[in-house]
Length: 68
Image (cartoon, rainbow, N blue to C red):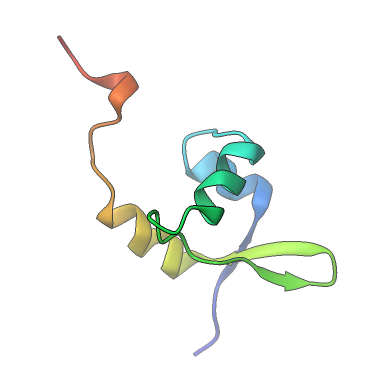
């Protein structure tokens, strides 16, 4: 089975329109356990299934979107 890959720009949108620097901080934080990128030349890709699995482990309530 082949991996489905996603480039950085669509991934940022998938993660809620976060910034590239926020993504880089998340990748480099060992506590986050975010899937490592796959490089093809200078282009960075991510395994869609690994990202989806990571998203499933995250809290469903974003701190900025909590209701009072």
